[in-house]
Length: 242
Ligand code: PGA
Image (cartoon, rainbow, N blue to C red; front, top):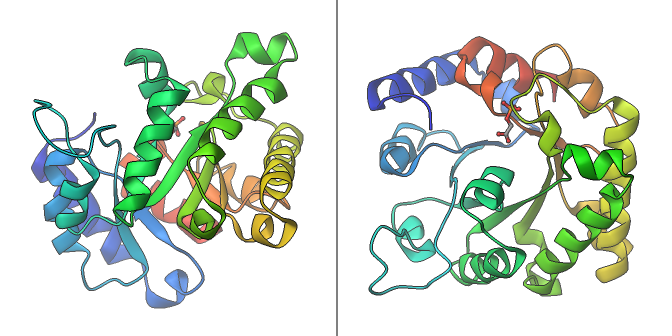
């Protein structure tokens, strides 16, 4: 919940101005603005085929009398192609459970949106060494909504809750270990060939200093960037390090 409309528009204009075709050739950039700016940014980025627009959330209902909610179908009708589901702030501040998130995934996929499904453990869970169990359970629930023929419409974002907005980053060993675990879980549920193709993003205080090392890890395919995406130069440098 950052930036007013004009500020958001300027930020995207600056980002577009700094990115050149060769930097975007092998990279997909997905911008996730707040709801009111989605249509504006769909238009603003329409000439850039490697840039997509995602919503940060969608409703767990398809349509009807749910005042204040935004449906996956509405997003699709505005030209949005991706949606973030289950960010830890949605889970903790808005009490979104695995069951609710599984419903959102189903509905978003039915609207042909690509889902960016977030998972990650809290500090207490890591300290008590139950991080694999936590993430394993979250993934099980996510996978329950994704049939095998829809897995190509799914991106996983691993975001240790203790690293989001805190300046703490998972060490390369911690990130690789969890990303490898996530890929194994995907292979178990679907198959290895499919698991190899799923993008698994790392999120949590990723910045222009640590991005290159994180993105260089075998099972880290990119990043989910929060604070560092609010400054055009740092965001573009992160994109370049992919
Ligand atoms: P951060 O946020 O990069 O500021 O830690 C990540 C996120 O919100 O997912």
